[in-house]
Image (cartoon, rainbow over all chains, first blue to last red; front, side, top):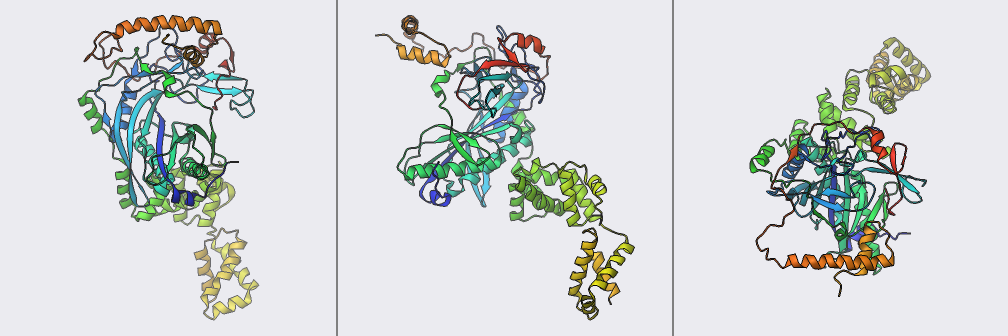
Amino acid sequence: MTKLNDYDKAVETYEPVLGLETHIELDTKTKMFCGCSTAFGAEPNTQTCPVCLALPGALPVANKAAVEATIKIGLALNCHIAEWTRFARKNYFYPDMPKNFQTSQYEEPLCENGYVDVVVDGKDHRIEIERVHLEEDTGKTLHVGGATGRIHGATESLVDYNRAGIPLVEIVTKPVPGTGALAPEVARAYVAELRDIVRSLGVSDVRMEQGSLRCDVNLSLNKPGDEWGTRTETKNVNSLRSVERAVRFEVRRQSALLDAGEKIIQETRHFHEGDGTTSPGRSKEEATDYRYFPEPDLAVMEPSREWVEELRASLPEPPRQRRERLQAAWSLGDKEMQSVVNADAVDLIEATVAAGATPSGAVKWWLGELSRRANESGEELGALAITPAQVAELQGMVDDGRLNDKLARQVIDGVLAGEGSPADVAAERGLEVVSDTGALEAAVDEAIAANPAVADKIRGGTHAAAGVLIGAVMKATKGQADAGTVRQIILDKLS
Amino acid sequence: MSTISREEVAHLARLARLEVTDDELDAFAGQLDVILESMKTLAEVNTDGVQPTSHAVPLVNVFREDQPQPSLPRDAVLAGGPDTAEDRFRVPRILDEEA
């Protein structure tokens, strides 16, 4: 059983140093070094060719769109774009790459020395970027014979090379000290900002749940004034929430070891989504074992300054600036906007407003009911089975008086259950505010007859007592009446 | 004194997932030694101020447009592997590493 410290205590004694390595799959039409399609979901091994299968004599040629996308990412992260850069072979023997090496970059990455600023707790944190380089993704292995699809207990692996050779950008931060107790939040904010920046560039769909953005979290602890400690690298942390949890867990685990006078082992660890813990991975090869050397089959790249400036000029509005603009347009306070950002709802609300909802209506649903649903199911907000257009439609039905908030929540149940659009669900489930005044009046009459004492109070001028009758009518109509209308009918009848 | 030890040869063999017998370790260590010794002759040349050559041709910026080309038919692809199952290449389990 892993011993864990209390988090707050741990960060009183130790200072965390973060490091984040992020892999982003580009959404080019073709692979990095050949013309094979990158379309997602194709039948296994239908998107391969002599180049990505490494058949003898095949020669790779770099995809210009992927190089451009990487330069754009570098520019958006305030990096220097190399005047001279080349690919390198990272040699390792594993069946996920048929070449027995991965084409990557080593000492001469395409982009270097940038930074990203993120705001956490009202304070700016600068995350320095060490490098952004271009490489290729590996094939997918399916381990069979074991119970869980993992290799433990597996007897053999089945390999699909459709993904092998898809352009992959690796973004590595410099060590990030000085975050203190906020390390988990800063790590999360960085990955979220990076994702927003890359998404704004339109070069990747950066879907963590689909693996087009994958994150490795490095963490070490040291006592104030001491040198940085030994770090661990937690691999494949694949949601924003998991990034935060992985950092928090490693702080608690490492601090307990250090308190006990033990040493941290430099190792890779696996993150477990289920309980938010990490466990040691098997020791892998050392960097020197990869025997990197320059890739002789691919020409050196010398991005011209004209090209770089052309790409810089094409960059869209930075996400942070966009957020400030939207905050003003939506008339939100800093705190409210921060909640929107934390909930990862900026795009969702923008799309909902674009689909016709008022900003306040869009904010209300995404931050309220829908955030609650996402929390309950442990999903990212954007992964909920409801679209911004559907939320706008729902709000429209509330504005038109066809739904009240209670019915709207039931409509959400239906939409999330895949029963169709809000209008479909309302029709199918019979969820519509009763606007038939005859039916309402009958229900009010019944409520008055059943509660004579209350009725007398209202007649006597105690209008607040109407709540009891409203409740009775709502119950009788299964919540499908508009409370305001019912109240008006009651007061009309009893005055 | 040989430049490359038996242990280093064994390590390289392990990285390449090659099974090597004790006799072979000795033989390869000796052979690799000859190669490394020969390279030392090259190392005597003064290369101050000379860029290391990684490419035989002086080409730069050779790019391809992002236009899909037909892939190989799957049958042909899989026929190149020693064993297949479920339209995938079947390989023995190799590293103790999680997927």
